[in-house]
Length: 489
Ligand SMILES: Cc1ncc(COP(=O)(O)O)c(C=O)c1O
Image (cartoon, rainbow, N blue to C red; front, side):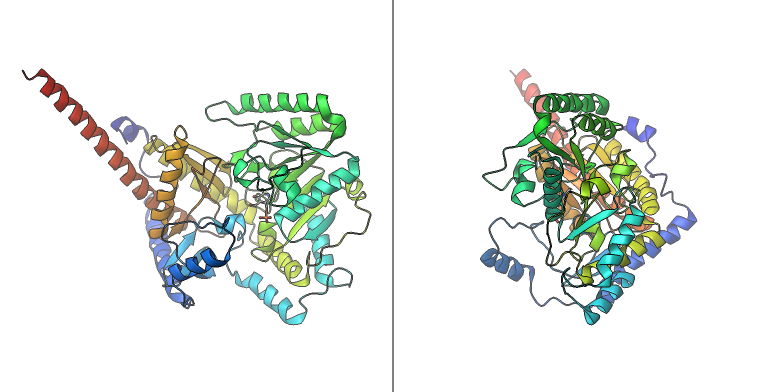
């Protein structure tokens, strides 16, 4: 930090000023962080090396893991997880946005276990209560989408939504954004814009990609204009063959890119004039993380189909796509998912929704998200050579490192992740170049956890900055020595 910045920006985040109350809160948080290491039994009998060896021997080679020295995670409690050696971590990634309601939340785990003891599975050809109750509950929470189909994952939910759109419009094509991610099935990889996740070598070729409404250093409204103009071109050229456009309201894997204000509503209007449906992929954004139950609502649009997974099951696999009456009517031939909405996942999802509502988690995500964002913004001001941009909504935030040199940024992102892990914080990463730190903690996280994480991040980034300053000084010293020696006769 130079002296000018020091003058402009007080080191305190403002949210976490060093008041008596905060000091008490902080010591409470430190105690809780330490206590988490002691409360859970150390369950792992395998070392990280042994687990890595088994994975290497038996997983497909596509499987990767974070960290040079990865811990083996054996237990979890709300915003904390513990490794096999008893070390506790505060989780700021929530298993990629899944455990929004906390790890092993007693209120939810209780419902899962109760159902597991009562009736685990029958499939939808038999009548059971939980999935019927869950469908009703979801239609009450999301009245714009009164009908729902349950499946097991985000990919499956998107696949179902795309097929529904084809059936409804009797058209084949799709529009998608560059740098998007929609899943791992053949059709969902076809509409995935992020190159690294396009695994099928023979993707469906009826997909039109338009630029996402974001470019580093470009005004969001200008980026939105360019994207909408590309949308107009595609619709004019091929609108009659296009069933739907699929969009993440916030691109998660794409690096926490929030669709700019008004973008989705304008896109929807244009799509409507060509009879093209809008699918909101809320797999990562859904159920309160961004500040409302659905980020698309928050960003001012009602889609025709919405897809959900991750947070809905709080760690028990469940996916769903929901639609308006009119669109849902087109899925009228027999279709069934063996596991979709089975009693255990449906009963768990009901408990998840109860918890989100009773604890008002969307409001909590908005409030704590503002504090976290402010803290990250301050890091950007303190360390402008390292943190290029802070983005996101609620508790779905990203901090891009070294945007102008993303390859170096990816390397440094891995370093930050490793050092934060060693300090007891699990941070995620994403972005086209994997140089974006991702913060998507369980929404049950406390303000004091955020404060401690920011302190640790400050220390990690501070050390990196110090190294840069030392190198720069040496170079300058070297140069002046060299130029001095040049002056020697
Ligand atoms: C926006 C989005 N859509 C779809 C998926 C695919 O979900 P799943 O891994 O549950 O199949 C993901 C996964 O990260 C996602 O982030």
